[in-house]
Image (tube, rainbow, N blue to C red; front, side):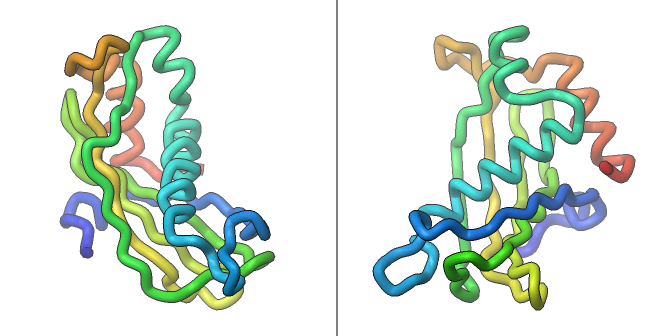
Length: 149
């Protein structure tokens, strides 16, 4: 899975977490579904760095980001207590759809553990498609052009 050219040029937001015991299976490696949870952690951090968060977007604008597609390619296992970095970038973006790309790496050696993406459709609370709130869309577009702190 390789991001498109626009995505490669976009800035990544990094989120650091430590693997918790509860996130691992009997063999001491992270259970595969937790990588999708970590994608959400990275996605929420990306939006916060842009200047808005999910709950504000829902409360103020009645706009929700429904997951329409998800993909994760596992490269190497993560273990309890390891620090990992979730790198999140915006890929495709238009008024109704946003695609986030993720890389999860081990902090100690930068080894790629997993990579993937999620595609989101902007919807109203009744589930019908709608456009991004203009303010949120502007912040996401701006993030593609400038480095986020």
